[in-house]
Image (cartoon, rainbow, N blue to C red; front, top):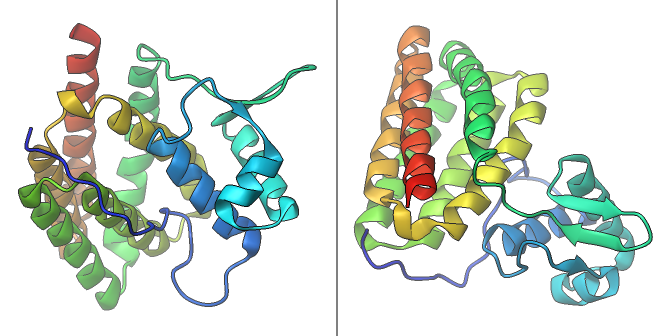
Amino acid sequence: MPNVSSSQGSTTTAHAPETGKRRAADIAYDRIETMISKLEIAPGSPVVEAELAEMTELGRTPVREALMRMVSMGLIVQQPRRGLMVSTIDVMDHLDVIATRRVLERLIAASAARRATDPQRKALLASAQKMVKAAQRGNLDEYMAADQALDHVNHAACRNRSAVKAVIPLIVQCRRFWYAYQHEGEIAEGAQAHHAMASAIASGNEAEAARGADLLMDYLERFARRVIDA
């Protein structure tokens, strides 16, 4: 794997709107999720609302709402009499995460191929190309930012809110898994898998789009198995 550099700019999660005025709770969610995904807040760490409000430069009310959303998706665990804690990473369970995500990603990709607008098809390809360029530079943060942008366009294009709501927690788990075990990964391979899926969706061919989603999940599964076997 090429050397990975770290950019300082913030990223936008796949479920966050990129235009219009955003709610403070959505901004809080993005900032906290990024810190958790990048392991700046380690798995198993206690979660202190006041500290997060200071770290995100937002009030405690939006932070509290963001934390409750994370509890509902399993990223944060609420323990009786012990408060909140960042969930740990279960390596063996990750294969089940990918298997479940595979079903949803096939549906989302096929729907996006059928329903995407021309600007969305162009945006998908642009994000995928940014992933390829970031991989060539070995910049994991830029790679992940482009990946999240691709997800956002793909999710908007598929117009299936139920599938998107179900897949987002799985994407977050995969993102955190990647940061935890990036030494076993190869971002150039990941970039090519994303580019193939984006190209298939942009072509409008539903069967090829579903196959592209399968190839992407195959890549993530190979990555997970390398971690398990290491």
